[in-house]
Length: 86
Image (cartoon, rainbow, N blue to C red; front, side, top):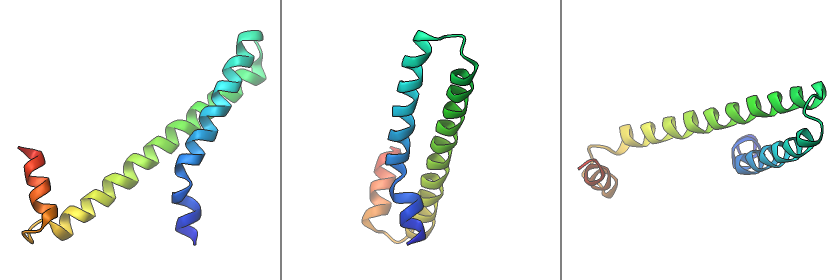
Protein backbone atom coordinates (compact mmCIF):
# COMPACT_ATOMS: atom_id res chain seq x y z
CA UNK A 1 0.00 0.00 0.00
CA UNK A 2 2.77 2.46 0.95
CA UNK A 3 4.72 1.81 -2.24
CA UNK A 4 1.60 2.23 -4.34
CA UNK A 5 0.91 5.61 -2.78
CA UNK A 6 4.47 6.86 -3.27
CA UNK A 7 5.59 5.32 -6.55
CA UNK A 8 2.57 4.58 -8.71
CA UNK A 9 1.34 8.13 -8.85
CA UNK A 10 4.76 9.50 -9.79
CA UNK A 11 3.65 10.52 -13.26
CA UNK A 12 0.64 12.28 -11.74
CA UNK A 13 2.96 14.24 -9.44
CA UNK A 14 5.10 15.30 -12.40
CA UNK A 15 1.99 16.28 -14.39
CA UNK A 16 0.63 18.38 -11.51
CA UNK A 17 4.01 20.05 -11.13
CA UNK A 18 4.10 20.86 -14.86
CA UNK A 19 0.56 22.26 -14.73
CA UNK A 20 1.46 24.49 -11.80
CA UNK A 21 4.64 25.62 -13.58
CA UNK A 22 2.65 26.57 -16.67
CA UNK A 23 0.14 28.46 -14.53
CA UNK A 24 2.84 30.41 -12.72
CA UNK A 25 4.67 31.16 -15.97
CA UNK A 26 1.45 32.65 -17.36
CA UNK A 27 0.97 34.77 -14.26
CA UNK A 28 4.61 35.90 -14.39
CA UNK A 29 4.06 37.26 -17.88
CA UNK A 30 1.49 39.66 -16.39
CA UNK A 31 3.49 40.54 -13.26
CA UNK A 32 7.20 39.75 -13.84
CA UNK A 33 8.36 41.59 -10.70
CA UNK A 34 6.08 39.72 -8.26
CA UNK A 35 8.22 38.31 -5.46
CA UNK A 36 5.53 35.79 -4.48
CA UNK A 37 5.24 34.38 -7.99
CA UNK A 38 9.02 34.26 -8.48
CA UNK A 39 9.53 32.38 -5.22
CA UNK A 40 6.68 30.00 -6.10
CA UNK A 41 8.31 29.37 -9.48
CA UNK A 42 11.67 28.64 -7.82
CA UNK A 43 10.03 26.16 -5.42
CA UNK A 44 8.23 24.39 -8.27
CA UNK A 45 11.45 24.10 -10.26
CA UNK A 46 13.25 22.61 -7.25
CA UNK A 47 10.36 20.21 -6.70
CA UNK A 48 10.47 19.09 -10.34
CA UNK A 49 14.22 18.55 -10.13
CA UNK A 50 13.80 16.43 -6.99
CA UNK A 51 11.05 14.37 -8.61
CA UNK A 52 13.11 13.67 -11.72
CA UNK A 53 16.26 12.82 -9.73
CA UNK A 54 14.25 10.46 -7.55
CA UNK A 55 12.81 8.77 -10.61
CA UNK A 56 16.24 8.40 -12.17
CA UNK A 57 17.75 6.93 -8.98
CA UNK A 58 14.81 4.60 -8.37
CA UNK A 59 14.78 3.10 -11.84
CA UNK A 60 18.58 2.97 -11.99
CA UNK A 61 18.66 0.93 -8.78
CA UNK A 62 15.81 -1.26 -10.02
CA UNK A 63 17.61 -2.04 -13.28
CA UNK A 64 20.84 -2.74 -11.42
CA UNK A 65 19.10 -5.21 -9.11
CA UNK A 66 17.50 -6.88 -12.09
CA UNK A 67 20.86 -7.14 -13.84
CA UNK A 68 22.60 -8.56 -10.76
CA UNK A 69 19.97 -11.24 -10.24
CA UNK A 70 19.43 -12.30 -13.86
CA UNK A 71 22.69 -11.57 -15.66
CA UNK A 72 24.39 -14.94 -15.84
CA UNK A 73 21.45 -17.27 -16.13
CA UNK A 74 21.43 -17.54 -19.92
CA UNK A 75 17.99 -16.01 -19.79
CA UNK A 76 16.02 -13.95 -22.25
CA UNK A 77 16.93 -10.92 -20.11
CA UNK A 78 20.65 -11.66 -20.43
CA UNK A 79 20.48 -12.02 -24.21
CA UNK A 80 18.44 -8.83 -24.64
CA UNK A 81 20.93 -6.94 -22.47
CA UNK A 82 23.92 -8.37 -24.32
CA UNK A 83 22.39 -7.59 -27.73
CA UNK A 84 21.62 -4.04 -26.63
CA UNK A 85 25.27 -3.46 -25.69
CA UNK A 86 26.54 -4.44 -29.14
